[in-house]
Image 1 (cartoon, helix red, strand yellow):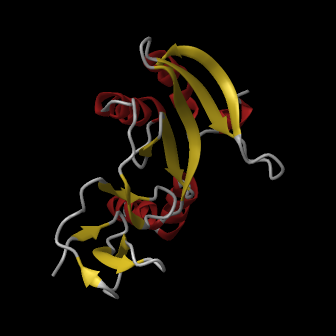
Image 2 (cartoon, one colour):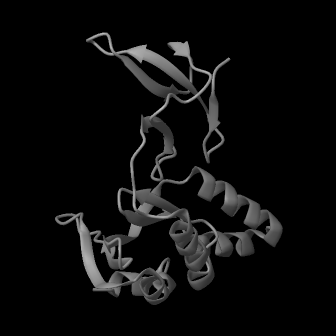
Length: 194
């Protein structure tokens, strides 16, 4: 059997090698084996799990100026400042993108109270729903100057005609921008940020 990867939803994906129309090798993950299994990721490739839906891809490794420490800083700060347990921070080229699940905790809490469901069971249900949820991009910290380590903050615009990033603030140090905007994640005040 080849290399396996289990995504956040608990689905197992298998690394496989196929051929393009021109006969060149192509690498991909599938939930079923449909081609030759591979035991390890080919050199120059990496595993990427889509934050939106949990699909797993084999892609060419992408160089980034974002350090693992900066990614960790954003993950920890968002959890601490916004009080959110379910957050994905993805590195997209030279930007850190914060994703939140498309489910809300408050209606689930109220439903649990109405039905007399114990708090612990509600917590497990919330975790399972977040595991299976579609995640939405909310906030992006884009690296502008890799020497100065200065970033700009942007939020996703949900107006149907725009569907793009809105500039919020910067350039500034990453810590400063995260401290300023992370507390708004998961709250109505987020939509008022301009």
